[in-house]
Every structure is written in C-alpha cells, then in structure tokens.
Image (cartoon, rainbow, N blue to C red; front, side, top):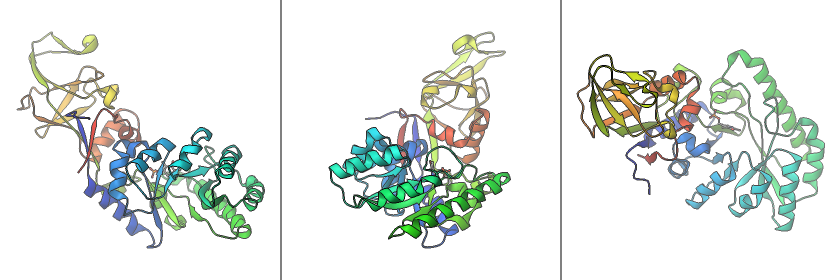
Length: 365
Ligand SMILES: *Cc1c(COP(=O)(O)O)cnc(C)c1O
C-alpha cells in the first residue's frame, strides 16, 4: 500500500471538462480514443480509465503490460496497444487487447498465434508510416498485406491508422497535409479490395486542434485530456488535471556562512529559514530545478528551491513565509506551473508529467 504524503491528485472534473471540450470540436459520430499510456501521462492509467470507461470509445496504451493492468482492474472498453512486440502477443490475446500490427514481422507472428489458437475475426489495427518514420507499414506493402488478409479469417482489421509528425507546428502544414493525403490514398486501396471498411484515425490532440477536417472515424487524445493544448490559448480553455502536493517535514534556521544540501550548493548570506519537503528527483523533480530555478507554493507564496535537488527531498527557502512543519506544499496545481517547470528543465509538459514517478501516491478526486 502506498501511504506516501506526497500525492498527485488527479482532477476528475478537469478530465471531463477536457474530454467535453474536444467532443464539442468534433462531429457527433466521431469516436474518441483516450490515450492512457505511461500511467495516464504520469497520473494513474487505471484510475483514469476506470473513470472514463463509459465516456470514451477506446483506450490506447503503448505497451501490452499497460493494457493488462487495465483489464485486471476490470476495464472492458476496447484497448489498442500501440507498440506491441512479438514477445507480448500471447498476453495480448489472453487479455483481449487489440494489437497495432505495424510490420510483417509482427503481423506474421500474430497470424501464427491466431492460427494455432485458433482465433476468429480477432480485431487488429494496421498502422501506416506516412512520414514520422517511427512505426508502420509503407504504402508499398499494401498488395502483400491484402493478399495475406484474403487468406485468413483469424483476424479482422478493426482500423487503419497513421500518426502525424508535426501536427502542432503550423510551419509544417504542407508536410502534415501531405501525410493526411498519403493516408487517404492508402485507405482507398484497402476500401477497394477489402469486403469491409475498417475505422480510420490519424489525429492526436494537436491534430484535432489544427486539422479537424481529418478527424475520420476516431481521434486519439492524450495530452489534451490532461490539460495541454497546442498553445497558450488552447491550453487556457482546458483544465489542469495533475495537482502535485506534499507537506513540510522539517524547518531549519541556518546562520550566515552555513550551507544547505549536497555539494554545499546553497550558501546562506544571512540567517535563512529552510523547509525540507519529501519529494526529489526520484519522484520526477528534475535536478535542473535546483538552485532557485524552481519553486513550490507554501501558504500562497513562492518558496524557491535552494541547493541541489536530492533523490528524495528538496529544501526551499521559507524565510519570508509564515509556515510550520506539516503545512501543505504545492509543487504544481495549474498548467502555468507545469509549463514553467518544463521550460526551466528545457523540456515539454509531456515529459514533466510523465516524469512523476510511481513512488508518488496517485489519487483521482
Ligand atoms: C501518444 C500518442 C498519441 C497521443 O498524442 P497526444 O499528442 O498526447 O494527444 C496518439 N497517437 C499515438 C500513436 C501516440 O503514440
């Protein structure tokens, strides 16, 4: 049992607000796939999925064990595994997960299992590479894929999909539109030669914002669900879902010339009051936030981090703050604070959120 006092509160109302915000942007018939990979972007994929299960059409995870965790928690919604590996295919079948088959290696491995089991019309998804050059078949693979599909009734193509490389970047509009057009041409070949029409999807969060015309049958929303849009304006319409909190463990008063923390990185010029907080780099607080680059909020005031971030703790300057041991500490509770941490750490909110480690207690409220 995790009884840690450092807790990430996941705001259920904010999740719903964000989901509805995107629903309103889409046609009523467009299905929504909620991306809950990487522990629901650093929150808790199981709690988020349980909360959203009757409000979305699909979930996606990156790896099969993430999907297994959802099934073990009783989630019945279809789950797309974006990046299955051959070694995981049996467990994908065992837990009724739906694999993305993105190469002949994994397609043939899955067909072999489907044949041995045997499976009947098992839902699979085919991903095409249209320019990201990460995972996916090439359009030149289509004739071979079609001939494989014609010879089996063990699998059924539930969807055809692709992923945009730069949907957030309007300077890459030509490239993105080209990806969408390539996808449309790929789809056409399947629709011409298959007896049924698989679902289609290509948009992630910023794709929905910038290219809503390409919503096809479903969209895959990740970061938007967790409160971040394409830009400041879009983000301002979303609500923050990740609230990271702790408490003050101990307060010290140190004299001029004394130092705080490892490598004696902070040297007190005058008498200084510091508070020690039970959260450190092992919890996802980057060491780059040390030495006054990052701050926390105590009793509505900013307390800068002094010295180096330790593995399990940070020390903050509370000389000007009226506070005592046991008081609440807010690491972040809005998008601006998360963006600031990302900026100072020279990264993006995706990484700041997913860095929140498993040691932090997660609680959906
Ligand atoms: C992670 C991921 C998404 C979600 O992207 P966001 O930008 O977080 O909305 C969608 N599709 C694929 C293939 C992904 O890997």
